[in-house]
Amino acid sequence: MGITERKQREKQEMRQRILNGARKVFLQNGYEQTSMRNIASEISYSAGVIYFHFKDKGEIFHELHKEGFSLLLRQLRVLDSVIDPFERLKASGRAFIRFAQENKDYYNLMFLVEEPLKNSEESGFQIAKEAIKYLHDLVLGCQQAGRFKDMDPEYLTFMILSATHGICALFCKDRTMSFEHKTNKELMENGYASFVALLEKG
Amino acid sequence: MGITERKQREKQEMRQRILNGARKVFLQNGYEQTSMRNIASEISYSAGVIYFHFKDKGEIFHELHKEGFSLLLRQLRVLDSVIDPFERLKASGRAFIRFAQENKDYYNLMFLVEEPLKNSEESGFQIAKEAIKYLHDLVLGCQQAGRFKDMDPEYLTFMILSATHGICALFCKDRTMSFEHKTNKELMENGYASFVALLEKG
DNA sequence: CAAATGTATTGAACGGTGTTCAATAAAACA
DNA sequence: TGTTTTATTGAACACCGTTCAATACATTTG
Image 1 (cartoon, chains in turn yellow, red, purple, orange):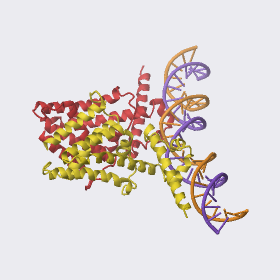
Image 2: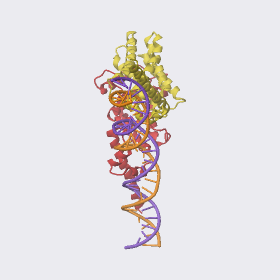
Image 3: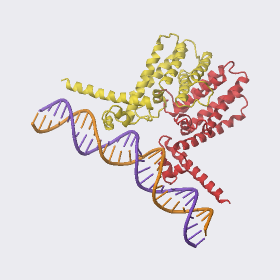
Image 4: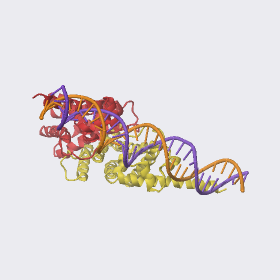
């Protein structure tokens, strides 16, 4: 009986259609300015139907949150070809910053939107942990290669993410105007470069 | 004629009353969850009257934004007694992080709420620039004392703020659960310590 | 003092938000 | 065919920021 299968497929398609609409409106207007009615009208449905396919706005948030991390991880994995762990670590940071520049809204969603901690143990944040693990392993690799001796790898990982995230966060929340600089891109890249200069000495 | 003076004073008092209500509700519920009606009912007035004393919600934002920075600067100035610029720089970072821990909502307001860039050149953000200048001067002091040789002080300043801000931002937006740690306080302080360890080598 | 002026406050209203739900249309099953 | 299941609608609810006519009050003027 292929009917139930088709039904399931159609339901899945509808879910995807809503998600596509949500992503589009969200990338245009930013997450905060995106309403359920916007999403619904984007795909020419009534607003109510979204609640038949998603629990609430939070569930859509989690889906796009996941999407963002999977996009980021895909871009980071390109660097798997770089063998030297420290070189890869430095390149990862640059890739991370470029991701924030090119996907400001995804970045806001992933790191800067406050969304209830509910489902925090679920799969929604599992992929975030995966991204952290990627960085953590990189740090361990560096230590095995003799770098960052007698530094705690946990705190070091947290610190490296913090430093890189800080650059992106100031950019994504438009807090860079207190600095004298030509472009945000230039500020961020040179700022990161001076962090790397510190890492080199570690 | 002291009547106009009293009138002015009363108007000022009303402005302050609203601001006090706004601060209270905001510190309880967070900025995003604070409505004009909440603020009004907190001080037992109708919501409309706020618009007689303030242009819009954004103006209240700017006032509290300013308050936050002035509070932060006050706490930083305690460290003026520390003579050695590098010691003062390190202590400033710790004070900054402590400020974020103890004033999460102020911190969100100051660095993590997206508020239109309008009035960005005005006095509202002037105090933010003052805070940056504080840090910038500290960095220059370190360089005069022989530290951070041949590093651009602008980018270095930006980087140091970014690193410290990153720690606070992850905390304030509840993005620390991807790390294994006992408490947020412990994670943040040790994370900052490992940043300081890098700075020591610069 | 009474009337007129100006200033402060209210409460209703507008168009928006996320969300729920009875009614309904459509499809699948008996 | 009629019945049951599933998907969709549109109205409604309680909230939001904001505006504005009406109103109460304080002060100044006649």
